[in-house]
Length: 255
Ligand SMILES: [Mg+2]
Image (cartoon, rainbow, N blue to C red; front, top):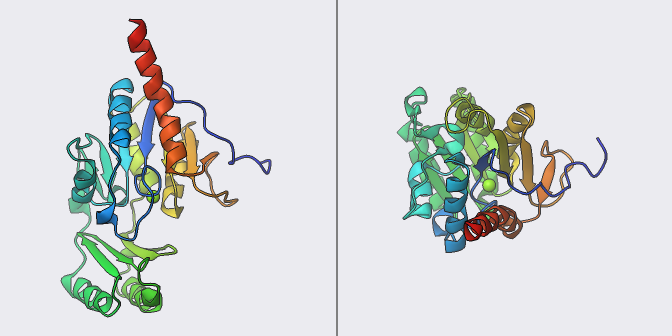
């Protein structure tokens, strides 16, 4: 691999793509509280146009819960989504494969977060997210809690980030979620394309690479990413995706 591979801009969108997009950090900037993110209308607009253009083959692939994703996207609720890193999927939602985290663990995490103003706990059924972006002092205690959890609940794995830890059941990731979609209409037979910004997106990059697709990392250059293309920030992502919408507009004008 040349040094520059993985640092090129992706090719312009095509009609035969199956498009998979992470949300936070990819379509919107990260903020301290995921529930405080506001999606710009133009993002919603571009996504709707792409969905039509791709015959519906567009899915959001996110760590958010379905409820949190729908709250962000309203009034346009996405038809296809893989939430909680694929643990919750729409249209099919095989939630039942993964039992919820026991309430004793959730209560302990919440009371821990209460000691650090700004620290947050999100309990989403089988997943438990610990955030300290707004409370860096909570990092040590939350990490210690997560390690204890991982020892006590071996069915789950820790996904450690700079500003938090996601505790998720083993056996599902964004790559598996994308592979699930690619087996079904309207995705099957198309070229898979996935854009995402953080380490949890790496399995998605690996999955689309394996299917001959296009992997796009959003953010600063990183040598250890499997992504073959890169955009620097959500603004560049929107610009890239809007090329498609503008193309559709121009075709519409010619008719
Ligand atoms: Mg992200």
